[in-house]
Amino acid sequence: MISVLIVDDSLTTREFLKHVIDADPELFVAGEAASGTEAVDKARSLKPDVIIMDIQMPDMNGYAATREIMENWPVPIVIHSTLVSPEQSDNIFAAMSAGAVAVTEKPPGIGHPQCDLLTRKLLRTVKLMSEIRVVRRKKQMKVAARPKRLSAEKAKEPKRRIVCIGASTGGPPVIQSIISNLDDNFNLPIIVVQHIAKGFLSGMLHWLKSYTKRPLIVAKNGDHIKNNHIYFAPEDENLKITNNKQLIIEPQKPDSALKRPINHLFKSAAEIYGKGAIGILLTGMGNDGAAGLKELKERGAATIVQDRDTSVIFGMPQEAIKLDAAEFIMTPAEISKYLNETVKAKSLV
Image 1 (cartoon, rainbow, N blue to C red):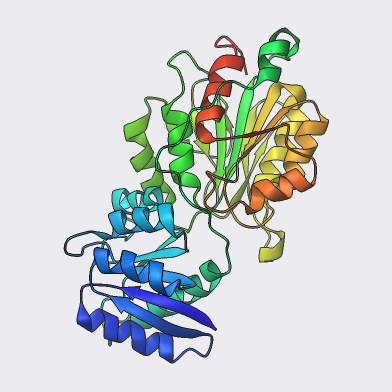
Image 2: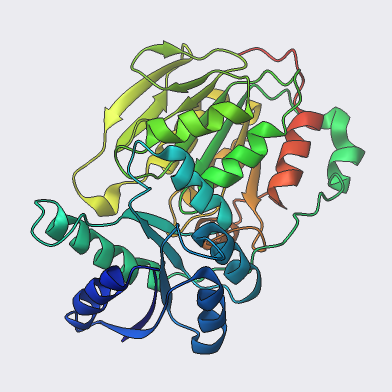
């Protein structure tokens, strides 16, 4: 069974969560906490499989408690709050930046039309997140030196013309870190596929706008790829690059097992750009992107995966490493440095 620690300063909410968890044969309540400080203590002593964490609490809020737990006793944390609706993007991505693996909206109360739906979503999320292996978050991310191979062979590198990034669980804060540390004269187009729940992409872009001056665009059919722009694949859609450097949106197949939007982008970039591309695969569970990164590497593209220590979930990067698809393993800080130092500012699409 999956052990759950409930963290919420509302006794009513804790009693409600205990009721729905105890009613599920796969879950049981390991303990409860009414404050962030108590949550940190219980996380250390109880070692639950997953934590349900509120945001607004006395003495230490949910962000601070999440950060403290993830830096010392990492465990999957699901933020559960009234402050994480799609319209409240800053709260959602602040939770992810603190180390939460998922966010869910708190049910408005028994009898409300949305109560059953949101409760079922919470329980599904708790079960799914309990299966992932999270890693300890670093208090400060060390900026490593430039990889030696780059220094030795800079002149031999092909001219890069596009950057493609794939990410899943834990991805938004890493994308934020990478793009916010790009130099002003870095002008290559960036195409991003981020696995994200429907309704949250626009909020993510709104949050990211405070970290970059580059245009952030949800891709549309027929968009011409422009330098210095960052394009994001729409939720639940595949993004493809055409021979004339346009973006095409294609519906995903209904079978969830076949939904691999990162692979779709990477393989398209491999076909059109070949050695002119840079493929980057970030934190996330599953194996989306691994096969596509392999194809990019085989076409001469530079291929990078995020390292284990900074990944919330090392699933996708690890799968790419198993396929020998990764030329480099880097921290987010190293990725930004690589892009700044190896991509020529005057590259053309």
